[in-house]
Image (cartoon, rainbow, N blue to C red):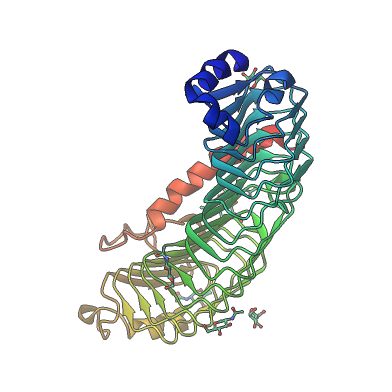
Length: 407
Ligand SMILES: *[C@@H]1O[C@H](CO)[C@@H](O)[C@H](O)[C@H]1NC(C)=O
Ligand SMILES: *[C@@H]1O[C@H](CO)[C@@H](O)[C@H](O)[C@H]1NC(C)=O
Ligand SMILES: *[C@@H]1O[C@H](CO)[C@@H](O)[C@H](O)[C@H]1NC(C)=O
Ligand SMILES: *[C@@H]1O[C@H](CO)[C@@H](O)[C@H](O)[C@H]1NC(C)=O
Ligand SMILES: *[C@@H]1O[C@H](CO)[C@@H](O)[C@H](O)[C@H]1NC(C)=O
Ligand SMILES: *[C@@H]1O[C@H](CO)[C@@H](O)[C@H](O)[C@H]1NC(C)=O
Ligand SMILES: *[C@@H]1O[C@H](CO)[C@@H](O)[C@H](O)[C@H]1NC(C)=O
């Protein structure tokens, strides 16, 4: 098939192109169904278009020769290939896709340093990956794999990074500096609950959606341009020691069952809402010592014994705090910030509620019922809470998918 495709292409391009080592095929896709097809590419320096390794190729495919593939390199729905190799490939202009490649154990492309996207999904036998490492890539998604390490990624500035359902991945440590779209983590590690994350150089990120991790360290993080959501994690403490603001989104912590201490010592402004709900061991909420301004609504639900926001002087949306314990001292302080028609100074512009002894305080993580069990008082509650509920449903689906591969 390859030979059939290549021949007319060479004829069409003529000898100049062949001498410069550029090979292209009509239709833009070269399909490799055997090692012989792969060897047919060995004299090309650059392959114009995409290379697809067909579902019957394997067990060993070596595509050494080309230094560059201008389009994608894809292996799809292949249950035969075990080893994929290239000694020369440095650049993939499009996506490096491995999807439903269930026997693949080794990828060895020691010069590969650049690809527009990495998209690996259902690569359930992979043991060893050697890349350049990859240091130039826009988007990375690694889902449902047996990878134990991601050392083949040397990330600096990326748009998006999503890691989910990688059952053997217990640690992710990266020199990542900026994330112009999102970081999404869910259901990694044994049982989906074992990932330690260290991002010592991360300075800003647009979206953080962090689920099921055992630790999350971001000592340099200064700005979250969009939202940061932390759901069902297993860390006891979380700190964003350098975070000063979210510039257009929410902060939420929902159902982090072991969390006892969350600190944001430099955080002054949250552009969207703040939701802290169902973190049942978090009994003192006092980590927001500098927080002055919240652009959306505030929803605080838990077993708090005290809740303190000593610097708070502007909440554009509703403020709704409710605890299973007695927080009447904390409520007294917030009463002073209540809307003027409720006797406060008007710092809180939406509806205001602060209640104690609410046995159902942890049952509502999206503000759909009010603290004292009476029906909600309306008002401005349109913060990130609703989108979090959607996210939770979404991750529940991936989590289920993950159990299919788990060990
Ligand atoms: C995965 O690939 C196998 C071949 O190895 C194929 O039989 C199966 O249908 C593919 N699964 C999906 C969901 O495409
Ligand atoms: C995010 O915020 C940082 C710090 O203000 C800024 O340098 C960066 O350009 C912003 N990124 C985006 C994508 O808005
Ligand atoms: C925290 O921010 C300050 C001021 O921007 C900076 O000088 C310092 O290096 C940052 N700390 C870390 C650990 O990045
Ligand atoms: C993983 O996180 C998701 C979303 O936050 C949650 O729905 C799920 O229950 C968590 N899984 C475990 C095992 O905690
Ligand atoms: C609260 O968190 C626990 C885990 O600690 C979880 O089992 C429960 O479903 C959560 N409740 C809600 C309403 O999300
Ligand atoms: C909470 O965490 C902060 C920062 O990591 C630390 O300084 C503080 O001592 C912790 N507080 C408690 C009660 O553990
Ligand atoms: C909460 O319950 C405790 C114990 O029953 C009671 O002493 C306290 O007055 C109650 N607080 C409020 C604000 O209702």
